[in-house]
Structure formats: structure tokens, C-alpha cells
Length: 237
Image (cartoon, rainbow, N blue to C red):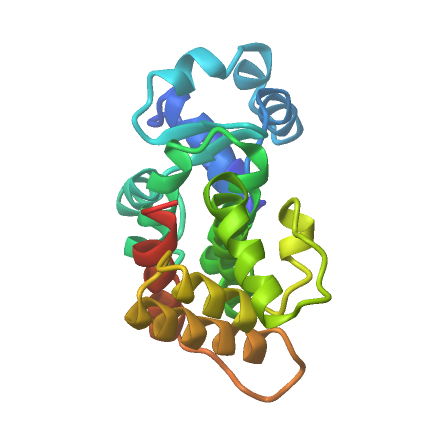
């Protein structure tokens, strides 16, 4: 909090920059009400008395998400370069790609996993980033099947498991083992053989990340994992 209070006390920063600083100091999206409360609690009376939205709407460094304001990667880099905040060492290209995806998503169910994955990458919680980015990608595939391929999916599932009930929604699809689900998608040509292999590698990595073990993940591994999911799933579905 010392960095935040020192920044809010600086006279060389604009009002917009101070609001950006508050967003940068918060873990996840933050509402205008929370921004004002943070300003008040950290001694910035002018910021607490004003409405942040007009300033943030004009900034190219923020996005308005369903549950509050968030800083773009470019905004964080700008604050770091001007020494408003400390360098965070985030995976800039990966986070930038995820944030670009979020700009086009207005469904809170679809965006929540990605928002959380972004925060995990920024905080170097690499296991969680791997798991959440995978969950978000599979959720998108489930929705695609429900909207466009449900009849074909059920027909193939019945061929393989005659006693299985028809899937009617996302929760039913989630009852399939994810490896089985990917295999059916490949059979239906929703994904190619090469894409199936790439996604299976991501699934195996998710399984490793999601279970107690001594394995550690490097930034480059996390970047490759999320980049694969962006290329195959997020950019398409």
C-alpha cells in the first residue's frame, strides 16, 4: 500500500493516472465505488469526491468489464515505464492477447475464467493460470457444441456408449471425460487432428498443474500453454 499512497500523493500525476494507479493496485476488476473508497482510505480526497468513470472512459488504458474496471497490459506498461508502479514481470504478449479477447466478450460466464487467468499470470500463480485458462477454453467448446453440434455429438456419443443419455447442455457435456470430449470433437471435424494433439497436451499439462506434486512451471511454459488455447479456441469460439 505504500506505493499506492505515495503515488496518490504525487503532484506530477494527473487525476486519470491516479485512478489508473488504484486499478493497478487492485487484484482483479474494480468498481467505481471501490475506486472512490480506495482513494478515500489512502488519503486522496479529490479522487474520493469525484466520479472515476468520465476519466476512465477517456483513457486508452482501461477496459470496462461486467464486474468493474481493469487496466490493459499497455496501461500497466505505461505506468511501469513512468515509474508510477513497480515492474511486475508479467507475460505481456499473453496477457495482451487475453485482454483483447475480453474486449469482445460481453458474457460474464465466458469472461470470468479469463479475467481470473490474467490475474494469475500477473501474480505468477502459474498453476492456477494453466488450470483456469483451460477451463475457459473447454467452456467455450461446450457452448459451441450446444449451439451448433449437439445432435451430431449425441449421435456419436450413443454410437460409443449406447446407454448414455443425450446431452442437453453444458453441464451434461462436462460429465464426459475431457479426453473423450476432445476425441469426439476431432471425429466431428470441429477440431483437426493436429489441434486435437495440441489440446491434449494442454489437457495433460492442466492435469499436472491441478494435482499435488513437485512439478514447477516456467513462464515460457505457461505462455505456450495459453497461446495454444488462444490460437485454437479463444480466437475461434
